[in-house]
Length: 326
Figure 1 (cartoon, rainbow, N blue to C red):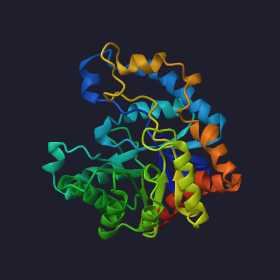
Figure 2 (cartoon, helix red, strand yellow; figure 1 turned 30 degrees about the vertical axis):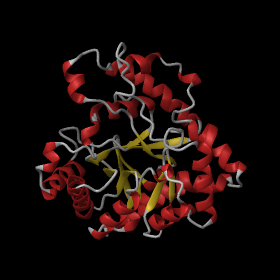
Figure 3 (cartoon, rainbow, N blue to C red; figure 1 turned 180 degrees about the horizontal axis):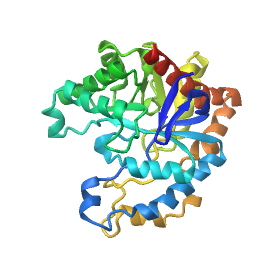
Figure 4 (cartoon, rainbow, N blue to C red; figure 1 turned 60 degrees about the vertical axis):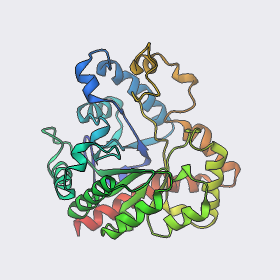
């Protein structure tokens, strides 16, 4: 049975259980954290994270895929602390986002791939923590810099067997899938993310017909697509026979300090820590509390939902890592 890397060590694929396939423990600017001591408080964050993850565990979640690449503020020490304190399995990512930093534009894909391969084979820095997945991203179009990053992700995947998950928006899901396949990455090792933001079913069928998995992984983010449309699209794909290629999640961040959350007077962390989370629908429980009942109203069963939450993530990781070990 293949082993899957988590931040607390490898586990058997059978231990994955109910898996949220695209979340973020924290998305935070490391430069701001380093220079301003009140930007973020890690010691306060730990009980906050434990509380929110505890709610998800009460609803059966066993594993969280943290889809935070290097340049979105991935903090592997803190992610591991959260996993240990909350007693949850977390799979960390290596990889780079779609921000066109100069160091990405100036770096050959082969060099970026070497950086990722080093983490995948030897661990992140001196922590010994090995990522279990590669994250890459596109937004709007596949720019030359973005192709560099996608190419690097493909090279790292081919060298190590590690599967890939993506951030894909604004018409890029199919382009991403085709590009990664052209680089030689097997379809069963690819999850094209954020496909639930699209309600064009024939287009999503084109993505699915490549053989890739798709992430219906932004449930609760109504600003991108309201619930009834997400549910309607997923149900149509289910009826067309694509149940085995869909994985679910929220794209929720236990903490995020992007400008949307920094409100001039108060820091993003002040806002997060003072929020009454018992009244917030959008968190790691949204699927269980809101989306699953809506799917069942459309005829889906507990078995169908279990397939997307447990069976498909397990198949995705097992196929990837079995192939890598052969």
